[in-house]
Length: 341
Image (cartoon, rainbow, N blue to C red; front, side, top):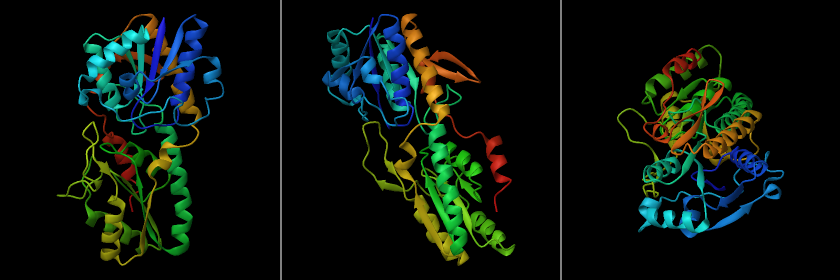
């Protein structure tokens, strides 16, 4: 078989682990692997490269993706889906493994319904795909954010400051919740619950009244104040209809300082959370996902996505991956609330 592999959407640590696993398993079984560069853009432009053992040697600890990535939506291009189907045949592919989040897999779902031989692998640091317990990349992002929060504790305490730490999380606050709990945040603000600024300020005052002269507030970029819209860097939409978020921490800091009188600073972690070497968890999960994806191709179980359920790697309908977003479990958030203020 000739199997194509593409990575689309935002990059994250663990992508190379998936690619490596697919290539190694395929070659050991006498199959050929082709890399599609820059996600769906590469399928539109027939931009490919051969993936052999040399190509994947040493990539396990590397962040990012050796194939490159983009936020390209073929359904926004003239005759996009038809071009992809034509290129699929001209390149001589028997199957395509698409590695990505809701947008990349949303395209894969439509193409699979139209008859293309596609298998999906879930990737997003936001951990917001409903059909899997965890996505690879999430654990690394949480650990990076946690380490940053740990470092901010010492400088906040030294200067008697409140620090608002903005982490990624467009519609779901998984990174904020996990990193906030692990990093000992004094308040965690997520998109699932509109921000009650009075409650936040009261919690900070409560800490100060008992002698704690600093506070750490972790906020997801998609969190909103009550009766307000999300804070945008710009209103321009990408090809999947997304705006660029960012700046909620700055808005919060200004309000907190005005209402409490405590000096407040912001730290926006941004793409730091996407970079660097993957954790052991993400390397192993990515590897297991890659092996399972190859197995699905060999079994001709197309239109399916690999998934983590408990400790087992299973497969689910690709449509289930993008049917709805997985938001933060409120039982987990109640655990976090124990430590607010």
